[in-house]
Length: 317
Image (cartoon, rainbow, N blue to C red):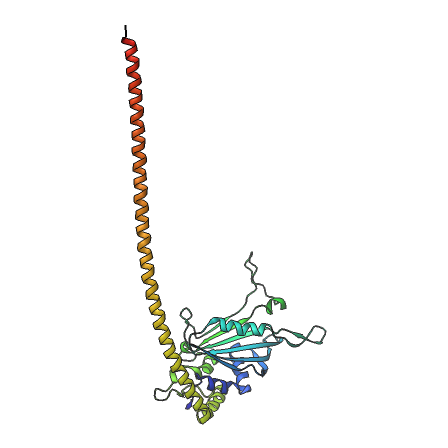
């Protein structure tokens, strides 16, 4: 089935603007039921700078855990097509740590408090040291002395730390092994068309209800002239940034060559200085040895002269 390529920011954004699709997708990723989801106003943005393209969503969600516990959380979802500047991700995260929302306290009264944060990163580029397509980085309470894992939750800790999910679309398994991989397969590059990179010939499992919803919406996206035009703009931006990065790479390579030459000159100078220092130390050592021999020779001559004087006194009539 031909659908719009969701790796494009405009298509990804169009897909997740369907709140029901976003709710079910996030439920599948988190492995917990997202009962309600709200895309926070003014919190969807695309930032472009140099080699970085980041699409950002902030969702306010109510999650029902397997034990029946209900939590209101802030879900920060970011998507980057190319190698990223980690400081930009940290800045977004810092912005969310400062935000508050209405929650019920232990007395059932509404008060403004910061929400726990969950971060999800869709990466269009591979991380060298992580081979898995989907990775969860979660928190564990551990007694450092006994190494015992503590089955507890503390609001103070929960509000200062957060769980994260990394999704590397280029490292998703070719054959889906569970529902999560079946759903995420729609983002996999294995279905991308070689003739038109704006579209994907999706051959995944459309029997899954969520996958079917996503495919239907992405099918409508490929028919939209406005979305296709925006995909063309993204392509042009990528080409421009590609040229800029090529120039940057040339400049960096040139600077690295100059630095390498200077380091070689410095190393050679250091080597000469070490040799000169060593030679100077050897000369100093020789001079000290000659001085010592001269002093010993003078002392011997003095002792010999003294002995001669003593002998003269003994043989004098």
